[in-house]
Image (tube, rainbow, N blue to C red; front, top):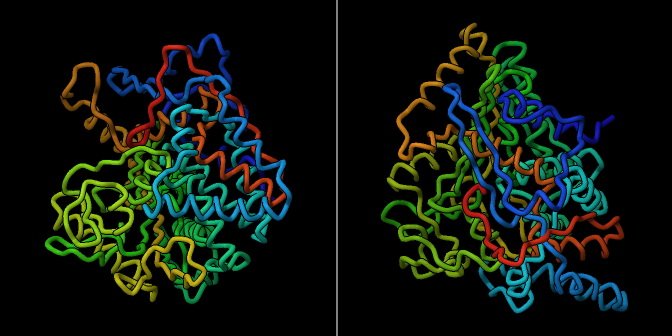
Amino acid sequence: MRVVGSFIDVLRRIRLKLNTAKALNDATLKNRSLKTELHCPETHIKGETGTVTTVTPPREWLWTKRTKIDVEFDKLSSLPEQQQNAVFWQNLKRVLLICGGQEKPGELEDKFVMEASGKIVEIMEAQRFVKDVFAAMDVPWDSATDMADSLIAADYMGHRSMGIHRLPSIAADLLNSTITASAMPEIIKEKPSVALVDGCNAPGPVVGKFCMDLALRKARTVGIGWVGARHSNCIGMASWYAWRALDQRMIGVCMSNAAPTLVPAGGIEAVLGENPIACAASGAKEQFVADFGMSAVSVADLELSYCNGNAKQLPPLTALDSEGTETTFTAEALRSQRLRAFQPEYKGFGLAAMVDIMCGVMTGARYATRLQHRGVYNADNAPANLGQVFIAIDPMRFCASFEDRLIDFHRLLRSATPCQKDLPPLVPGDKEFAHMQAVDDQGGLFMSPCTLGVLKELAEQLNIEPLQMKPVHYGPDDHFSWPKGNF
């Protein structure tokens, strides 16, 4: 029997060890009054030396007033059913085309951004809605729960491009049968410390949870568990799976290959994916969480920003256009799907190649250009056959004082001389923990207008309970701005 709030309880249980928040009761979120939300809520991180870092979330998290855009969300419900279906599919395709740079955000998207009619959605309500969407698409209930957990955890931790924003593309894959909704992963072969899993083309989060849980069981028994997977799909935010190890006082590592978007140093054709790596380690008072892909900028981040009418320009040394020429235009980068690795480019690309060897070459999955390029609403899409590796390590088998040493390790990192006196250095994981606290303080997740429009149509067409939202109210002198980076 699945506990509805279990995934969020795990996240909070780990975060609270850092002493950045007061204890929360189960899945209950804190709400602030309208009068106290005249300014952006601030989150404070206290280091070992007593120094306090203040992180201010984006202005979009303020409570804001209802605008004319709310009326736009209600228009479709009055149309005949046949016309509703046509509009639904057209809009779903439009969103995916915008994300792929094939279309520009139109008048509707521009209006959404200009008027900033976003909404606040409580975390468990967002999880409920996403789970209902997948269940309505014939995904088994437990699998739908795993998929919803992965997306909402990404939004909660601040990795918004890996969150609910991905719901339209996943829905398209399910409708195209690119992903086998009812499939479950199977163990091909295993030894006490290692295993190879066939994902059977199941949804990526289903494969990821199965493999990480298997790795954790092995680590508890023999000290380390290494599980490789093939015939898998996109798992979303890699750190979600590494994070699962923290609650069991383990070190978690997750890595995955991906469709080609990365060009080699000196080349113009995409031959490797962004191939993310995530690592998480926990002590009694400190947690380390690192999650990064190998490109200078993530395709998913570009899609999210461009879909919402932002980030039309890129910094140099970021992407190439379809002709292999340097470009600073987001639309060109999305159309070409040719990104450069982080600098120094040769080493960034080398790290991506290392991940592909372990995830693709070694597991029997596809790799490099044998993986199909990212498609945009293509009914002919074949199964992705991605490869992944999930590792769990019991650090106490190596060093009984690991947790104390991890505290000392973080103390040394935080005691480094800062560039700005009032802003001490950040340790990997600080932004995620601060984001989670800020979301709790705000009373839920901010959903962009573009995302809300698609979610409303999904609810109507799949006949599920609509997403329950709270309005966001701006003061007369407030101006809307989209978040940058993790915030």
